[in-house]
Image (cartoon, rainbow, N blue to C red; front, side):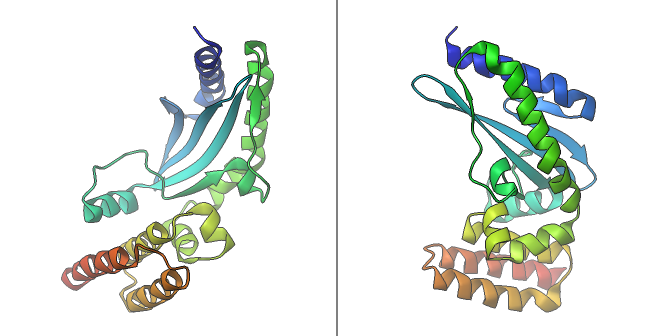
Length: 210
Protein backbone atom coordinates (compact mmCIF):
# COMPACT_ATOMS: atom_id res chain seq x y z
CA UNK A 1 0.00 0.00 0.00
CA UNK A 2 1.48 3.37 -1.06
CA UNK A 3 1.81 6.26 1.38
CA UNK A 4 -1.04 8.24 -0.25
CA UNK A 5 -3.50 5.37 0.11
CA UNK A 6 -2.30 4.56 3.63
CA UNK A 7 -2.49 8.17 4.86
CA UNK A 8 -5.93 8.63 3.33
CA UNK A 9 -7.23 5.43 4.92
CA UNK A 10 -5.76 6.16 8.34
CA UNK A 11 -6.82 9.82 8.43
CA UNK A 12 -10.41 9.09 7.41
CA UNK A 13 -10.56 6.32 10.00
CA UNK A 14 -9.16 8.65 12.68
CA UNK A 15 -11.61 11.43 11.84
CA UNK A 16 -14.50 8.98 11.72
CA UNK A 17 -13.70 7.97 15.28
CA UNK A 18 -13.76 11.64 16.33
CA UNK A 19 -16.90 12.68 14.41
CA UNK A 20 -19.07 9.61 15.02
CA UNK A 21 -19.95 10.59 18.61
CA UNK A 22 -21.31 13.86 17.17
CA UNK A 23 -23.70 11.84 14.96
CA UNK A 24 -21.73 12.28 11.74
CA UNK A 25 -21.81 9.49 9.19
CA UNK A 26 -19.16 8.89 6.59
CA UNK A 27 -19.67 8.56 2.82
CA UNK A 28 -16.26 8.15 1.18
CA UNK A 29 -14.46 11.44 1.96
CA UNK A 30 -17.52 13.27 3.29
CA UNK A 31 -18.75 13.30 6.85
CA UNK A 32 -22.37 14.41 7.21
CA UNK A 33 -24.90 14.91 9.97
CA UNK A 34 -28.64 15.13 9.39
CA UNK A 35 -30.33 18.30 10.65
CA UNK A 36 -33.90 19.64 10.18
CA UNK A 37 -33.09 21.56 6.97
CA UNK A 38 -30.86 18.89 5.44
CA UNK A 39 -27.23 18.06 6.20
CA UNK A 40 -24.12 19.57 7.75
CA UNK A 41 -21.05 18.25 5.93
CA UNK A 42 -17.27 18.09 6.16
CA UNK A 43 -15.42 17.22 2.96
CA UNK A 44 -11.85 15.96 3.31
CA UNK A 45 -9.56 16.36 0.27
CA UNK A 46 -6.16 14.72 -0.14
CA UNK A 47 -3.71 16.43 -2.50
CA UNK A 48 -0.75 14.28 -3.49
CA UNK A 49 2.59 16.07 -3.74
CA UNK A 50 6.06 14.68 -4.37
CA UNK A 51 7.11 14.12 -0.75
CA UNK A 52 3.90 14.75 1.19
CA UNK A 53 0.13 14.69 1.13
CA UNK A 54 -1.76 17.91 1.79
CA UNK A 55 -5.16 17.71 3.47
CA UNK A 56 -7.85 20.36 2.94
CA UNK A 57 -11.19 20.50 4.76
CA UNK A 58 -14.36 22.09 3.42
CA UNK A 59 -17.35 22.89 5.63
CA UNK A 60 -20.70 22.76 3.80
CA UNK A 61 -24.42 22.98 4.43
CA UNK A 62 -27.02 21.27 2.29
CA UNK A 63 -30.62 22.49 2.31
CA UNK A 64 -32.45 19.42 1.03
CA UNK A 65 -35.54 21.14 -0.37
CA UNK A 66 -33.46 23.79 -2.15
CA UNK A 67 -31.05 21.28 -3.67
CA UNK A 68 -33.80 18.89 -4.74
CA UNK A 69 -35.77 21.62 -6.52
CA UNK A 70 -32.60 23.04 -8.09
CA UNK A 71 -31.63 19.60 -9.44
CA UNK A 72 -35.13 19.08 -10.84
CA UNK A 73 -35.12 22.44 -12.63
CA UNK A 74 -31.62 21.84 -13.99
CA UNK A 75 -32.57 18.30 -15.04
CA UNK A 76 -29.52 16.86 -13.35
CA UNK A 77 -29.34 13.72 -11.17
CA UNK A 78 -30.18 14.37 -7.54
CA UNK A 79 -27.05 14.20 -5.40
CA UNK A 80 -27.92 13.86 -1.73
CA UNK A 81 -24.54 15.30 -0.73
CA UNK A 82 -24.47 18.39 -2.95
CA UNK A 83 -23.95 21.59 -0.95
CA UNK A 84 -26.02 24.78 -0.90
CA UNK A 85 -23.28 26.89 0.69
CA UNK A 86 -19.85 26.22 2.11
CA UNK A 87 -16.14 26.84 1.83
CA UNK A 88 -12.70 25.74 2.94
CA UNK A 89 -11.89 26.16 6.64
CA UNK A 90 -9.27 28.87 6.16
CA UNK A 91 -11.52 31.03 4.01
CA UNK A 92 -14.26 30.63 6.58
CA UNK A 93 -12.06 32.53 9.03
CA UNK A 94 -10.89 35.07 6.38
CA UNK A 95 -7.48 33.46 5.92
CA UNK A 96 -5.69 31.70 3.09
CA UNK A 97 -6.48 28.07 2.37
CA UNK A 98 -5.27 25.84 5.20
CA UNK A 99 -3.38 22.73 4.17
CA UNK A 100 -2.14 20.14 6.60
CA UNK A 101 0.98 18.46 5.24
CA UNK A 102 1.51 14.78 6.07
CA UNK A 103 4.91 13.35 5.20
CA UNK A 104 4.72 10.23 7.35
CA UNK A 105 1.92 7.95 8.52
CA UNK A 106 2.96 8.63 12.11
CA UNK A 107 1.78 12.27 11.65
CA UNK A 108 -1.86 11.23 11.22
CA UNK A 109 -3.02 11.41 14.89
CA UNK A 110 -1.43 14.80 15.63
CA UNK A 111 -2.66 16.38 12.39
CA UNK A 112 -6.07 14.78 12.89
CA UNK A 113 -6.29 16.51 16.27
CA UNK A 114 -5.34 19.83 14.62
CA UNK A 115 -8.13 19.37 12.07
CA UNK A 116 -10.66 18.57 14.79
CA UNK A 117 -9.56 21.66 16.72
CA UNK A 118 -9.95 23.90 13.68
CA UNK A 119 -13.39 22.50 12.89
CA UNK A 120 -14.38 23.14 16.50
CA UNK A 121 -13.10 26.73 16.31
CA UNK A 122 -14.97 27.81 13.17
CA UNK A 123 -16.96 24.92 11.69
CA UNK A 124 -19.56 24.44 14.40
CA UNK A 125 -20.38 28.16 14.56
CA UNK A 126 -20.82 28.18 10.75
CA UNK A 127 -23.29 25.31 11.00
CA UNK A 128 -25.19 27.13 13.73
CA UNK A 129 -25.28 30.52 11.98
CA UNK A 130 -26.63 29.20 8.67
CA UNK A 131 -29.22 26.77 10.01
CA UNK A 132 -32.21 28.28 8.22
CA UNK A 133 -33.25 28.86 4.61
CA UNK A 134 -33.55 32.59 5.34
CA UNK A 135 -29.87 32.81 6.29
CA UNK A 136 -28.83 30.75 3.28
CA UNK A 137 -30.94 33.02 1.06
CA UNK A 138 -29.06 36.05 2.44
CA UNK A 139 -25.76 34.44 1.38
CA UNK A 140 -27.05 33.60 -2.08
CA UNK A 141 -28.26 37.16 -2.58
CA UNK A 142 -24.87 38.60 -1.69
CA UNK A 143 -22.48 39.16 -4.61
CA UNK A 144 -19.66 40.52 -2.49
CA UNK A 145 -17.32 38.79 -0.05
CA UNK A 146 -19.77 36.57 1.82
CA UNK A 147 -21.58 35.32 -1.26
CA UNK A 148 -18.37 34.84 -3.23
CA UNK A 149 -16.84 32.90 -0.36
CA UNK A 150 -19.76 30.64 0.53
CA UNK A 151 -21.15 30.04 -2.99
CA UNK A 152 -18.34 30.95 -5.34
CA UNK A 153 -19.81 30.27 -8.81
CA UNK A 154 -21.75 33.44 -9.75
CA UNK A 155 -24.44 32.01 -12.04
CA UNK A 156 -25.07 29.07 -9.69
CA UNK A 157 -25.38 31.49 -6.78
CA UNK A 158 -27.90 33.50 -8.82
CA UNK A 159 -29.96 30.42 -9.70
CA UNK A 160 -30.01 29.16 -6.14
CA UNK A 161 -31.03 32.61 -4.86
CA UNK A 162 -34.11 32.39 -7.10
CA UNK A 163 -34.78 28.83 -5.94
CA UNK A 164 -34.60 29.91 -2.30
CA UNK A 165 -36.93 32.84 -3.03
CA UNK A 166 -39.46 30.42 -4.50
CA UNK A 167 -39.31 28.19 -1.42
CA UNK A 168 -39.67 31.23 0.85
CA UNK A 169 -42.66 32.35 -1.24
CA UNK A 170 -41.04 35.70 -1.99
CA UNK A 171 -43.05 36.33 -5.15
CA UNK A 172 -42.98 40.08 -4.54
CA UNK A 173 -39.17 40.04 -4.63
CA UNK A 174 -38.66 37.69 -7.56
CA UNK A 175 -38.37 40.23 -10.39
CA UNK A 176 -36.01 42.34 -8.29
CA UNK A 177 -33.74 39.33 -7.82
CA UNK A 178 -33.68 38.65 -11.56
CA UNK A 179 -32.80 42.28 -12.27
CA UNK A 180 -30.12 42.44 -9.58
CA UNK A 181 -28.48 39.16 -10.56
CA UNK A 182 -28.64 40.00 -14.27
CA UNK A 183 -26.82 43.29 -13.67
CA UNK A 184 -24.15 41.55 -11.64
CA UNK A 185 -23.60 38.77 -14.18
CA UNK A 186 -23.39 41.39 -16.95
CA UNK A 187 -20.87 43.41 -14.93
CA UNK A 188 -18.47 40.47 -14.74
CA UNK A 189 -19.18 39.32 -18.31
CA UNK A 190 -20.41 35.99 -17.05
CA UNK A 191 -20.84 33.61 -20.02
CA UNK A 192 -23.83 31.89 -18.40
CA UNK A 193 -26.17 34.89 -18.29
CA UNK A 194 -28.57 33.48 -20.87
CA UNK A 195 -28.61 30.18 -19.00
CA UNK A 196 -29.55 32.04 -15.83
CA UNK A 197 -32.38 33.90 -17.58
CA UNK A 198 -33.75 30.63 -18.97
CA UNK A 199 -33.66 29.16 -15.48
CA UNK A 200 -35.45 32.23 -14.12
CA UNK A 201 -38.19 31.81 -16.74
CA UNK A 202 -38.73 28.14 -15.83
CA UNK A 203 -38.93 28.93 -12.15
CA UNK A 204 -41.22 31.91 -12.74
CA UNK A 205 -43.70 29.54 -14.37
CA UNK A 206 -43.72 27.59 -11.10
CA UNK A 207 -44.47 30.82 -9.22
CA UNK A 208 -47.46 31.38 -11.50
CA UNK A 209 -48.78 27.86 -10.92
CA UNK A 210 -48.05 27.77 -7.19
